[in-house]
Image (cartoon, rainbow, N blue to C red; front, side, top):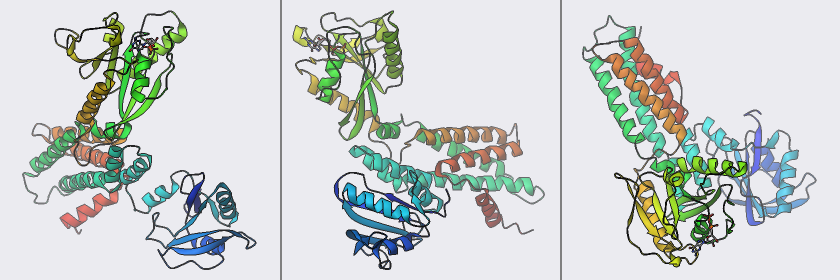
Length: 453
Ligand code: GDP
């Protein structure tokens, strides 16, 4: 699959629609547009009504043609866009026609954006932002993705990397030209710059995963003994039948998830197998999955039956600060004695009273959950960390900067090691934006130090 190929794809969703959009990108886009319309390409970036014809000149449909000559296009290559009517038959005819053309082939998933990246239209974080924007289901996901697509993360990471390259260049100069007259406080300055960046990265990392929660959704797992009403609660919250409510204990053997939108934040609610001691192999597997899912959730809701008012130790063990306890089946008659559930001498959890069956307390529960999500995912800085990929690279950058600071300290003065640490840090930052290139470093050295030997 060569980059020189001309690629085409239906860029709008498949199905029946008023219009749909085809995109063709590559060196033969002009020829393809001319062949499809039976005339030359229209003026650049001007919507032009044309008839689309098949290989024999028979009409397929009529619609708009847009011509974006390189490099001012989405991919940076010649791009032609065809807006046709969105029927399955028109789509099939267009795909067949484009597929017959010499030098054209269907695009791979993400190939347009990939070409845009290779042609410098996007860095990786912007491309990821575009992907997130296309996938966005809630208002907060949309806002965050749009900011990222518009370069909020790129600007920050590139600024950090540019600073680091300058710092490294200063150190490289000492290594290569020790005999020259360099400022004696250079090590201190380099060490200070490394520590400064390290603390900025640390701050950026210690955000309680707000951006990642917005992107991936805040996950809430419902835990509890069998028959306390977990599935009924999920149904009440989702206001639709997603889990089967039965009267036989231990029937929810797998995880059932529903997605909610609370105040513009995506929330995934997971119903789990009831936790209890069991010898049934299938049920044990369900319980194992339930515990694993509960452990990596953002929050757990422990459900207790009003008839027993006891929290099984198996359930209590999954809970920690930030979780909540629900007393269900209050229709059976229970007094609202306390606002908190006391786990032990140190820990109390918020306590809410509900009837999953009658719907009592469900609105209060939804407000409570909404407040929790807003508090934990909202109010984040303008360019939050949004992905584990970035987090991993930033942690590696921070660790390398830490090592560099040690290697530069007065006891060590291990300049070569420190320079290598800074190189690693630079490379890790470059991996986030996709700009890993030693040429940058050479450029800076020659520009900033004017070493013309
Ligand atoms: P799970 O095993 O924890 O998922 O519990 P289910 O949701 O399957 O419910 C178990 C039983 O409790 C069913 O018979 C439900 O109808 C009943 N139940 C659930 N919620 C309530 C409630 O709020 N009040 C009463 N009276 N019964 C409930």
